[in-house]
Image 1 (cartoon, helix red, strand yellow):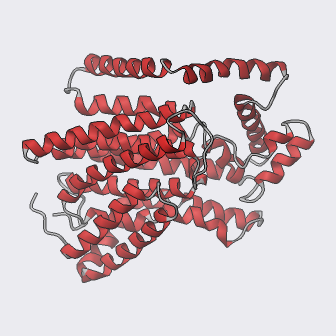
Image 2: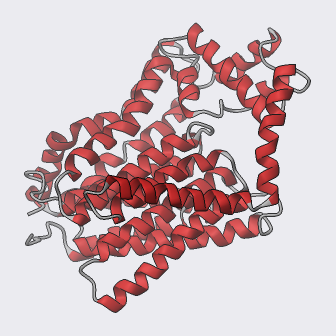
Length: 428
């Protein structure tokens, strides 16, 4: 494919450098994610106008090609509008998180104008980000000894993001096929180390919920690297890798104790001797959230109605006062259902699975680089789904920003490597 960049080379470099800073340091340095995200939005707006009529026409054409994705990332903004109109218990600040996802509309187009070589370097950024996060996780946990920490974002979400970035780093090895052999080997070593480091972050924090995303990483790796046409080999390789990881985890005494605590917590919950264990609190929140959803099925209790609704459940004896003090449901889908009702569930499903549909459709029967871009996109979406089963990722600023920026980068990578490229996007 003969690339004819629509934007000046300086604009390409500015977009890449800020994106690389966001990826490498955004989740490890307080406030940097927000600063670099808004700088990326500014650069994207400038990029639309700097190319004159050609770039304006290309961005306009992107709406014709990607409008389902643009609608999907607007779902929570629509929910907030409905909530404010019908319930009216919020403020303009409540649009903050919802609007972050809509940055995809600008960023995906801007990133898709970058030459392919920038995406190869992006794989290195994924690896460096994971290594930085591993060092910080080791420091926060005292080498895996302590689960107490002081950090600007929860260490659970932090380690989950680190694991996702590590998986993306490993998969990006496929982007390096055109590089000289010595460089390719060096980058492969770096990226494999990053992949192991991402799993090590989860190991250090001993989070049980974060383990749910590990099968996503393993299956994606087997799909990307095990030769085509042999499903038995792919399945066998995936099972062997997961068995190896399970063996490593089970060798840690602290992790074995945490697994045994699951059964103990369930017994305590069923006997009602202690409802406020880790598992017991989650079960209370899930049951309470389902009840609130049944009572407010369409638009939920509103952005600022969650704590009040839990308080009423505590007064009725449905949940304990301790459980009512939690700021979220420990489940992304249930929290969206309580806050925004069915509208919120549909918005969340669209945010996850509209991109999944594009990655599957656009990555089919493509080159290895395009296919692995699609696999990386699937890993991002499905890992967030898995992590969201036991946590509420999007309640944290860095998580919503990372999902938006990484989704934009990976969709742009797929568009850039896809042949033929979508019409009229300037990707000749």
